[in-house]
Image (cartoon, rainbow, N blue to C red):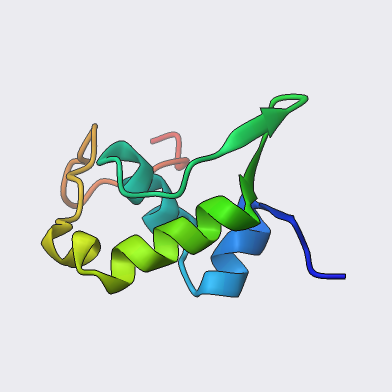
Length: 82
């Protein structure tokens, strides 16, 4: 039997999209629709197919990477306590 839904991790693996890119696509409204069960997001097979069709029709061609919300300070690292 074919899978009817994916976790976000499974969707990303199946469709060759990184989790980071998935979340960037969500921010600009280009990710597939998700639904939640016990606060865990899932992508239905139908939503994945609709998303793939939209991407094949060129909807994702205008996608530009979303700038970070809090850009780091160049040359500074975290966790050193100095």
